[in-house]
Length: 73
Image 1: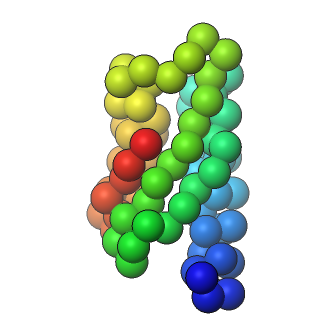
Image 2: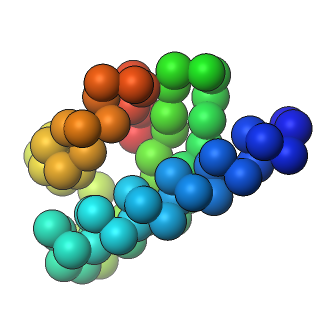
């Protein structure tokens, strides 16, 4: 992984963490990984567990990122 990729991941992690925690209290963004030039993997956790409904809510919060990235959970 290049330094540029690492820096981009860290920037995205900060932005996504800020957006998700503001919109969905109790949801923790554990990591954000660039799995390609136009694909993100977002790892989230919640005390009550992670299910499809939670991932759908997180996806809605991250709707603006979908212009540049496909998002996996």
